[in-house]
Length: 227
Image (tube, rainbow, N blue to C red; front, side, top):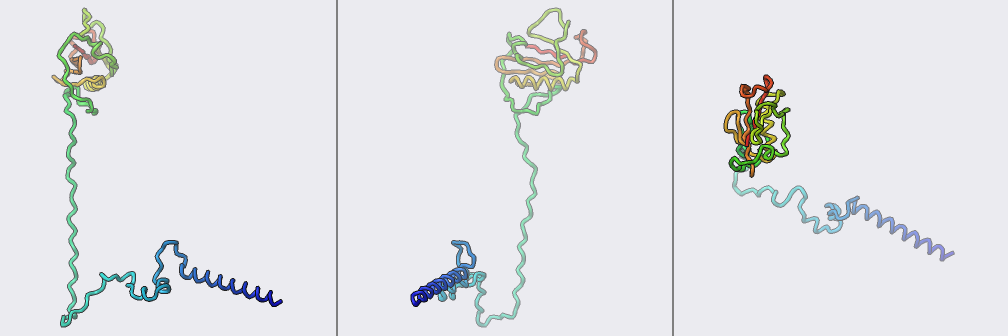
């Protein structure tokens, strides 16, 4: 019976010490995350001398008020500090114009929105036919060969016509198509431009005077391509 009481006493003592240690641990940590610095009360409990010399968190050594100077008049209030005038906001100036490659298109060949085509010098007129020079072209605005425009078939001078739109629309669309093929367009007159690329040169003329083209329907736009 005595041995049983001794065992129970030691079990009770160990349980009490475990509960006391757990409560002390919870009091010291107070739910802090691991690695967080101990607060002031916990630091004081751990090291009273060290915590007693530390400054409060909200009052650092640099923020202490200056010591009073002997004999100075401390009754006069300091004048309020004049707030610093913020610098005037800079007004955004006009955006600098972006430089774009020069375009030689004018008249019925207004400059295209796509200015990425490089300006290249083309050769002078040669023996290349129109079909060879504009190989792969897709004629815009319904342009089709004008039948009966000439008695002799000239491979270096072809005539197209359309009744679908205006001369300005035809000139713009045709110039865009030639630029797609790698040509550089340079207007030499209001209704005439020269398209050049290495190995080929084509003169494009947009006609609104149909007296030279009796077979063209009234109100049509006639375009000639010559090499």
